[in-house]
Picture 1: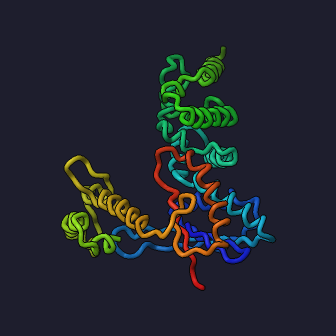
Picture 2: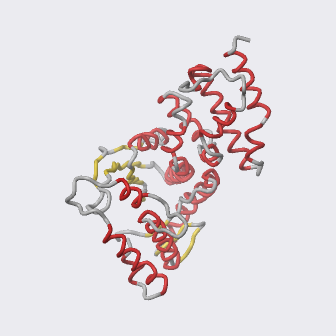
Length: 198
Length: 122
């Protein structure tokens, strides 16, 4: 990403192979009046891969130096949430529907939790291990978590997991402890009980 | 990508030349319509012990380039490598970097967020 500041104007030039992440960036900056240009499809130079990517530019005109500083600060604080965003989105495929995955990642960014902790603790495996260890689990092969808990329940659970993973790593707790945190098990116990009709 | 590294007359650069030339020579010809799976694997995999891959070579080159860039930097300002900035630029850079650094911990062990700042034009 290239950020060009000229006077009170800030231009972002961003290239991405994932159009969905460009939309995430746009949504993240929706609190500011950023004028986005058309997304251009480009091909990497002839050579190894010919990978195509999208290029987009966003222009922001601050009304004064305070707003300029605030925008640059906000931009700086949000870039970390672009890292591995698409990988997180894919890791969540087995648990949530598409729109809920996007919403979860957006909210994780807004709350400055992010997806890094979840991925650091092996992403989907973190959830799957917890599910597999529940011998009375009502989940069967091919089920998604949202099919068992409902969309809202699955989202709430994943929000908890994202926060628990981030806080656990931040506080230098062991990954095993993060996984076994009492509330996570309580949530699982509640939903497997519900699924079993208890 | 490799040119700046190869241009340096040092041991590190020499160590890249031979494997790079070997891998380029081994690449499938662009006019062929079909590529073997093994060729794709070789291009994209990270190196296993004792083996190389183009992907691994690119990552290694990237690390060297990052080091070279840091060495070239005139100054570091709050973690950003800065070149030929004006005094008036500093508050903007510091404000941006303060927030970037504040949230950077959320990427945990993932690399990234390296920042370079310079004046353009003028």
